[in-house]
Image (cartoon, rainbow, N blue to C red; front, side, top):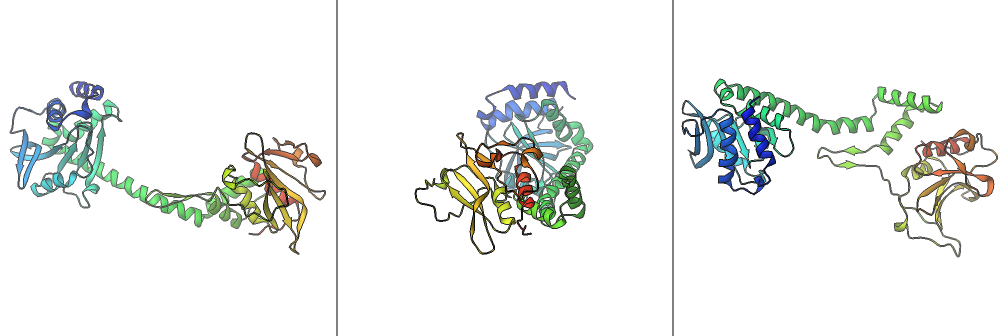
Length: 366
């Protein structure tokens, strides 16, 4: 690794004026200093030719070997975005048969293989950014892709093609990963289903079937499109308000904190459960097969003085388990029946609710 180039990069990284320099200043203070440290004779126009003439215009710098251009460098003023400037540079390079082209504003360097197939953007194979990368990494990349020795030997093109293949592989992976993830979520692999089933059985002693796991994945995990946009399961559910008793102080739903999505998901999974809002509570009632709402609460979400949802786990005499003793972290609510309660955000809250409902007579709808 060149100590001379390392010192140049250190100086440039510490120069706060870099983004304010004009093109001529970038050429003189950045480009020529770096080329000099890479063993180019910057005063010899047969090696480093500024404003190199091409048909239809010129390139800011052409690096020549034996009077033939091997690398084109286009310079923009400090801080100027590079997007949108590559087409002219790559067009010049393509027509001249130049295999390496560089677009830079001094602090950011974009490297291209102009003769590759694809759009101009697809021909970019690497980037150097002074404000984001370590100086050693920058020096190594510049030596690999721009040193005089590597240009003469042709190793620059070899290094560039390796990086290009790596970047293409990364791009293919990044565009395929959403498809792979969405397929796993919508059509779970048997191995994934079995692993999740075994882990669930290990934790609670009950093994879910394949359909339960598939529904769980669809309800709880986001899907992703190729642009990177994420579609997540709804976490804020609008509460269908029934007719309220006279004198009930109903708060505007927009004022309430988000209700955990699992509450409504579970309510939908069990036949006869419906959610009603009463004052500062969301009450889960049971509607029997005749359509009549029973007078007891299955469970309740109540806002505490910190405006946080507290889950109160009601249960009747036919309950097949004791929540208070079975689940660590619950506590008596203090109301009638000394019902246990816990924060609705508790990591095991959903499991508590599921066990409560399955311990009762409710029929789960899958």
